[in-house]
Structures are given as structure tokens and as C-alpha cells.
Length: 331
Ligand code: CP
Ligand code: NVA
Image (cartoon, rainbow, N blue to C red; front, side):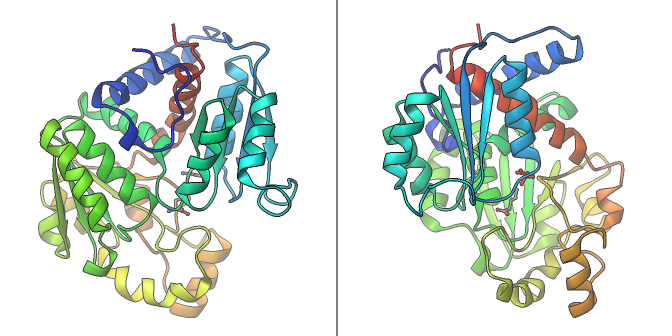
């Protein structure tokens, strides 16, 4: 397996073997970290981390992983760089490509990260776009594999807005890895037909399946994994809250959902999550609409089913694997 020089923009670009390789590499790097074995094979190299949207996990994962690999990192936030306002993506790519061995980008349209990768001349890693969140998928798959000991054949159900980065990415990774993906949402929140078609072709090869349903009871029955995400994503206007609350409340993950899935089912959430009133936005929504939680209940979040903090930790190990492999430090 040789991924040196490759960008990591969407899992559509990677084969089943390549994705499984990255998950196994992450598991190995995690084991080394726990045992205190140094992996600083990239000493003297540097990475740029561009964030046009906010982040806790992704930024920290890239910074800690870069440091563990021996690299320096430079963080660019939306307010402190020229990107987009005074300098095009194409020019930014050519400048950063002269200084850094790799570039992470979190932002808006997928075309932006694609353009960055086209002109940078070094690997570019997608740290979340409106359409995809591929590093999150590796973390989720590592978490699932650690728990179930396998991936192929498992049933993963996504509940909520299935048109956005998280659901799109789950559909792709399940289709690539021979898993059974179910999106439970009102029809207008189903993923776009073009992407569904592409994923159906991946699933034909891997043995996976794709199901889109409005029926949450049928959809979540006997699921191995129940996933959800916030109802309003970064960059979306506040005006959409009311409609989302109305449309997506029947798709909230509750203990009844987990019971319907079965006693061995697990719960994943990329985080951050509105599972209680511990956030400013959560309290504002509570004041306005009377909700104590949104996409999942606090009971599920804190239950034995929940693997959300293993999942969050695995962001770092999997991002480290992506950087190590694409910068040629995995052997
Ligand atoms: N899951 C995730 O991407 O978290 P951050 O937005 O905190 O990076
Ligand atoms: N769908 C969410 C994911 C956050 C990690 C967003 O884009 O804001």
C-alpha cells in the first residue's frame, strides 16, 4: 500500500483496501501512543491548518498528530489570513505549497478543497466541507471496529438531516466497506440522487446496501450502529431552526430508538451535540421552543450504548494515520 503524495478529499477517491489500511494504521499508531512509542518520523516538516469554520476536535487532532509525528503546524483562522477575501484559493494553494509539506482545509464547498489540492503540489486533507467529512469517517470506523471486531455486514443507521456532510460521508464509507447504510429522515432530507447512485455502484462491489426511509421504527430495527448529527450545520442561517425542529424532531435518537435497535447497538455522534442545556445555543432554543435536547436525548448520550468519547479520541489517531500515509511516514 502506497498513499504517499495523495490528497484526502472524499472517501469516494479511495478503495476499500485503502480505507481499511488507514483504519489499521490508525489502530497501530494508537497502540504505539498508549505504549509511549515515539513515531516522530516527520521531523523537520510542517503542515498548514486552514479553518474557515470553527473546530475543537479536528483542529486539536491535526495539531497533536502533527506534533506526535515530529512536525510543526501553523493554524490559519478565517479572520487572520487573506484567503478568499484578498487572495484566491489558487494563489493561496501555490503559496502554501512552497512552505508546507501538507495542508488541511475546513470550510464551505467541496470545490474549494478540490481546487486547493489541484494547485498546492502537496497533499491536501479535507477537515470538513458542506458535502463531506472524511476524516470523521475513519474515526467512526475505527471506533466501530474496536467495538464489534469487524465492519463488513454491520447495519449503520443515520437519523436527521441526511443531505449534509455527515450522512453523505456515512453513505459513502458504508458503500465502500460492505456495510448496510440506512438514512432515516423526511424525504426532503434524503441525500441527493446522484450521490446515492454513485454509492449504489460502490455497494454492488462491496456487498453493502443503501436504504432511504421516512419510517424511523422500521429503519432503526436491529441496527448495530445508530448515528446522528446536529440539525443545523455550521454556515447555515439561524432562520432554518424552526423548520428543522419541526421536521426532524420525530428522528431524535431516544432510548426507544436504541431499544428498537437492540441491546447490543451502539450510539455515535461526531460532536458537538445538543443533548442537554449545557450550551448557549441549546439554552436559546430551549427559551424559544421549549426543547431540553435536540438530535439525541441526554439519556442516550450518557448511556452504555454511547461511544462518543472513544469516537472523539479516535479523530486524533486516524488523522495521524492520514498524514503519516500521505506524507510517506507509514513504513
Ligand atoms: N466532529 C468534529 O469535526 O468536531 P469539531 O467541529 O470540533 O472539529
Ligand atoms: N454537520 C456538522 C458536522 C460538525 C462536525 C456541521 O457541518 O456543522
